[in-house]
Image 1 (tube, rainbow, N blue to C red):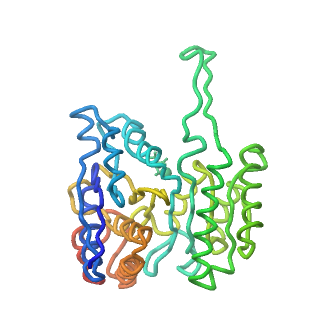
Image 2: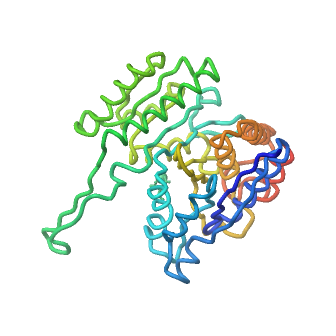
Length: 360
Ligand code: IPM
Ligand code: MN
């Protein structure tokens, strides 16, 4: 009997619907090859709905999402909505309420893709970032006093507790363990904790001790390394080949994964997963809603297609995931895509989606 999955689709704003359509096209074609079936249910959360109803992501929707196997999100962000409302109300609300405590972001340079790093190639850029996704400064603790006076003050607290740190580290170590089994080249490289423990002596120390205790007691066969976040920024550019799995707290992960996206060729190819290993996860291309490209058939759907692959991998459909990844990789290696940037691909959004689907 065919295995089937129920996926909640949130095409969202701007170019979100266009890339979601292509991701779905490729996903359906790949699933058909492997006897997997996907049932989609679409939700219209996003800027348009917010402007009409004032609603971002109601609690009832979160409850409904819990019944799905996964969520796929196109993009969130609308030029007529004040920045922060949709991000907090939809994206961060889903992450928090569904306890998607891992943000998984592969940084992989495919053959045929140009990186801004001179002298670096696909053999040098192939790692993943595990970003803690619900804690730290994103927890939302803090406040202001004496607002709108010359004495105004504000705080924003980087909150971490041992359980939050431990569950993120556990996911990272286990992911690293699976990577090491997959490829000897990965196994030679360490898992790298990224923080700023020379200054953030409280939270940095919490992460550092938890990392080493877990490494020593449960993953003694895995090599470990540590970088301060500022240095990691430097090494991502100068020696990306040193990295295989980076694990870090929320804000540092947010920042460094944008850098990661650039060295792998840009937002056109960067995908991410908001993962609750025990619950419902949500996958998305890293790029935003790109209002100026909306409806023009020029946006790159590859990041969304890769996000669909990541979703299938997380659901345990390894064959489907590998098929999607191989098709993307073949399409890029073909040399027929001029650039990953919107409007410069040398083909349209739909055409590129068709190309990947045919290459499966
Ligand atoms: C990301 C984004 C979000 C974040 C924003 C849109 C809230 O930058 O997914 O990296 O900061 O996590
Ligand atoms: Mn970000």
